[in-house]
Amino acid sequence: MAKLNNISVLWIDQQATLTVDQLAAFAEQGMTVHCAASAELSEDAFVGAQVIVLNLSQCTGLLKQVQNAQMTANSTAPVVARVQRDNFELGIQAMAQGALTVVSASQFDAREWAETMISSEISQDQQKHAFVFADPVSRNLLALAERVAQVDVTVLLTGPTGVGKEVLARILHDASPRYDGPFIAFNCAAMPENLIEDMLFGHEKGSFTGATKVQPGLFEQAQGGTIFLDEIGEMSFHLQAKLLRILQERSVVRLGGQKAIDLNIRVIAATNRNLKNAIVQRTFREDLYFRLSAFKLTLPPLRDRPLDILPLVEQFAAQQSGDGQPVRLTSQAQQMLVSYPWPGNVRELQNVILRAMVLANQAPIDTQHLIFDDMPITDERDGSYAAAPSFSSPNFSSSASDQGLPPQQPYYVDNTNGAGQTGNATTGLNQAVKNSECQTIMAALQVSRSRNHAAEKLGISPRTLRHKLQKLREQGVSVTRAYAR
Image (cartoon, rainbow, N blue to C red; front, side):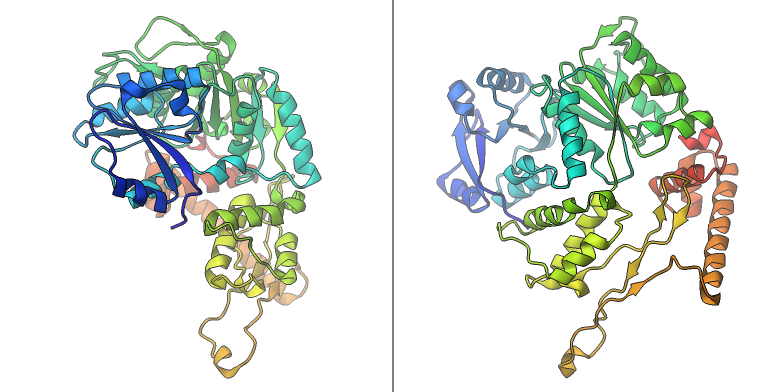
């Protein structure tokens, strides 16, 4: 496990304090802990604190007190709430009121706390180096984003999967006058429609079975800040109409409520779909598109900004190693990384580097350590597929190393050349496989009550099915609206 890089923690506990041995154990894990009781809260207590650990007893009043003190001290450190295991409701309230995460109040093990910090992405290095802008294309995008951030306008981010749309959304928030407000990110395809509606708009007490209290929605929680709606193209027509009204009226009505609540928020949406095609297919509202795209930013794929690749490699390697040592790559490995088309964009690059570090085992990364994902590349212009160049994985079963021979080098397989009998046969087989997959998917949709049910019949995850349906729509295959969500 990678260690933290000297994170400063403000530990607030009314009932107990950490022992000298516990403080030393935290220090070994890269955490410098400063203990305080609630009565000692002052502006000076928050100076330099990167994380605040807060022990809650029966209510979230102390959390509100700490948040008010943070505002006075101009502190933006995230709060980790500690609650008793049997008080689950208190943990939910703390998360709703802005706590980053909730852990058990009985947790004192330094290793467990280090894992909590890393899993919650509380890291000085990660906060400072969230994105790389080395390529001129990226620098132009950053300069434009910083100008757009100063204007309180709705922004639509477009680009293929894995290029960093949420990262750019955070940059837009941090560079805007709303930087000290909340940043709420929500994936519109992550859950069923009824739950999405409840989470976005909130509900009044008694509005449905189980609604035992008033619950503000994410739009309300983003007051004074930014709400980021990822995968907006997957939102249902019903919710699109409600979102359009919120953008027009700048107010929201909770489920079961009558009163409109005024909103002071900025909306940033993102999609990897072609929304203009979705409008033609009547799966996305044209009026909503023009409301969201007051300013449109397109993130280019990684292959179009090659000078970002090696700096990203250095960043990912530094995050993985945790010891601050720079990654070492041979010139051949660097050339292979820069020349690869990266159909999976930044996410695929991160996976390749993690594999390479495991295989290299602290030695310089060479070509035999680079294992690329075998996936097709989609041409954004016509939605057609092209075969991605593939590289062989290292042959660990070979005894060449035992005989003093050099390790087997990966070879390049060009699947894009259709010349020759073998190439034509392969192309025909690939097309037949695609046609068969399309027919199987459409048949499963016809006999299933929902997309999740269809995914279960096909033996794949709902997310994989959603991705395949998107590819079919991009190729002009008509997918019914019920399953286009």
